[in-house]
Image (cartoon, rainbow, N blue to C red; front, side, top):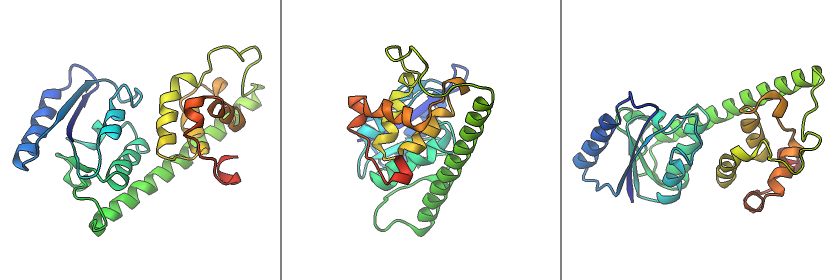
Length: 227
């Protein structure tokens, strides 16, 4: 399965230009595209809306993912490197960026080029740095909310109402599928919630444990990581 992926945020951007670059690369390198995904959606939308889930679920060892730039795949320095590491290193997918060949990963395997290993290490470092920044902002936000007298966690009378985490369920699911620690997921999601709606860890864990779809994906770690 070889897939081309083109994404634009608005109709003012040129998806056709991305498609042309992708098909030209495939033709010049003898790659037969099985699908060319074109989406017009903001990078702020979830992975399902941007059809990133389709890439993760359908691509495997030796397959090709071709797009023009890293920014087409993700929205920030946390998500994009995480996705590339998942596809290239873990699933063995050949990831190609036609306009950024320095970030392409072709023929990933045991004989991976040392330079590419270095790039993956940098991506991992970027992930860790972003997580620390998210953690710091979350702690600062929670402290500020507490200072204002805001009660965090589940609000009184909301037990049977729609949970503020529900709109983020698919993103939580995807992060669990790629084995991101629950504490890190909590920080990522809290960073997207209004301060009054942010969840402490126990409330977040309760949500995951009591959702059958999420609970089967969660792998409790050592106490300092997830408890």
